[in-house]
Image 1: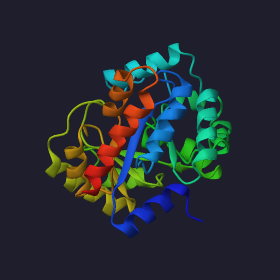
Image 2: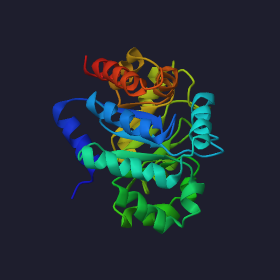
Image 3: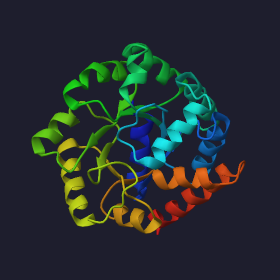
Length: 266
């Protein structure tokens, strides 16, 4: 039986559409607001939602998302609280996949088998762990698969064919191609090289490829959609949520999601 993520990409492929994959940090400014934001994302065209799990040392993230994680932790966000948000979202939105995006430590502290079981029980569909080297991925993916979770792997510009194949051994759902070195929040400019590398990842892995890092506008998303299976947008959404007046975060996130969705569909 296809996972919720696999089914989503099959539907998109059949209709000739590209996935819009928004990222938001859970608990920024608080978990109740996050629940409303997730509803707005789903209502305005998100295909797969990446939900960032707050962590005190988010080394792969740029200053915008680092600040969001700091605010979330200061507001009392916990792993259990994030799972409660996922559980509520799943009850309201049975078909929209949710991927928990984060770091290994919060999973490791609980025991990987127990953590994967809790994530799946809450209704999440996959894990993306940014600081887990491919050489060590098996310790997590064995438990993720047992729980019915997809493991979303990261592929980078420095991944050669052998590296892509090694990473793909543990990957399922979709491949996340990191468009550039550095951290989240930078700006993507070399679309030609990214297109060639994304195509190579798709060919070797056999997975749909979503491109993230540096997609700041609808125009960027449209250019990525011309060659990739989906576009991931994080920093721009996190900025919009933080800039919105209190109580207006969901509306801001929904409006930005609708604009990206329209650009991808144009």
